[in-house]
Length: 434
Ligand code: ASP
Ligand code: MG
Image 1 (cartoon, protein in one colour):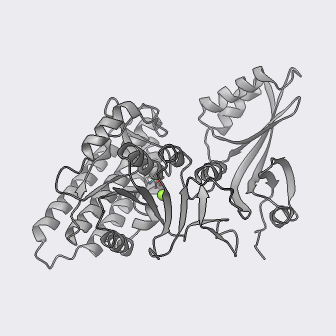
Image 2 (cartoon, rainbow, N blue to C red; image 1 turned 180 degrees about the vertical axis):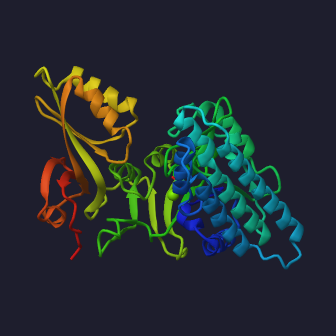
C-alpha cells in the first residue's frame, strides 16, 4: 500500500482535481490511500470566518458565501449534468448542501469563550468538503474509491488547534478503518483534522496534512508516501526568493527534520519522525510533471555532499529580555521565561543568551505578543525589534553567507558546524542568486 498526499494547491480548482485524477489513474495498480487538504486557500478563508464568528463581525455572511461559492464553482465545473450519472451527482450535491447548512447553522449559534475549541469545530469543513468533492469526482470518472471520515479513527488530546495524537487509541482504529478488506483499492480521507476523546473536532496544526499521511504510513506500514507539490521537489531555496534554485535529489530523514524545523515550508516538521522509525521513504513529487523524479527523503548512510540550503522566515520579532533585578540569565530565569511562551502558545524560532539577557526570535503573527510582553514586563525589561527576518543556511559557505547578508544589518548570528543562522533587520531588498 502506498500513500498520496495532495495539498491545497493540488486541489485548488477544477483543473487541479482533474490532474489529481490523472495521477491517481496512472497508479491504480497498487492499493492506495489518498490524503487531501482543503482546496486552495480555503483554510485561510475559514480562519477569517472563525475570527468573524467569534467577534460577531458584520462580514460573517459574506465570508461564508465566498467559501460556499468557491466550492460550488469547482463542483459545477467538474460535474456536467448531461450524463447517465445524474442520480449519483444529485446525491453528492445534496450531501455538500447539507454540509454548508451545518456550517451556516454553526456560525449562527452563540460561540463558547474557547477560541481554539470553536476554531477546530469549523476549520474541518475545508477538508471534509474538499475530500468529498475529490472522492466523488474520482468515482464519477470510474476510479472507485471509498471516502473515510478520519475523525472516526484519528484520536487526539484536547489541545485544540495543535492537538497531540493518541497513538494507543488511534492505532487499532486506523488499522480497522483502513484494512482494505472491502472491495476497494483506494481509500480517500482528510489530512490535518482529527477528533478528541470526547468526540469534538480537533486539528494537528496548520499545514498538518503531511503529518496525517505520515501517521497513516506508520500505523499501516505503507511502502512509501508521495507528497504532490507545485514545485519539482525539495529545492535549496524558495523560488519566490531566488531566481536560480537547485533541486535536491535525495536527502536523509535527519536532514529533512532539520530543514523543516528551521522553517523549510515544503514539509510539516512532525512528518518525518514516524516514517523514519519505519524507514518508509517519502517522495516529494511535481504535481504538474508526475513523471519527473522529484526528491526522495529516506535513510541514507553515506555522507551526502549537499549544496547550501537557504531558509528564510520573514516578519520576525527579536525580543531581548533582561531581568530587572540584574540577576543572570540562567536556569531559573530561562525556565520562567519559556513557561510564558508556552502559556501563550508562541513558538520560539531561535534563542541566544548572554549573562544578562536572553534573545528570542518569534514570528510576528500572534495576537498574543502584547500579552506576553505585559507578563514579561513584571520581572524583565523587554526590548524588541520588529521587521526582522531569520535566515538559516544549512551547509553554509562564505559565499553563501555573503549572498544573503549583503548590506543588511545583522542583529544576531549563530553558527554551528553545519548551520549558520542570522536575524537581520529591514528585510527590504531581495536576495538574488546571481
Ligand atoms: N488545510 C490545512 C492548512 O492549510 C492543512 C494542510 O494544508 O496541510 O493548513
Ligand atoms: Mg497546505
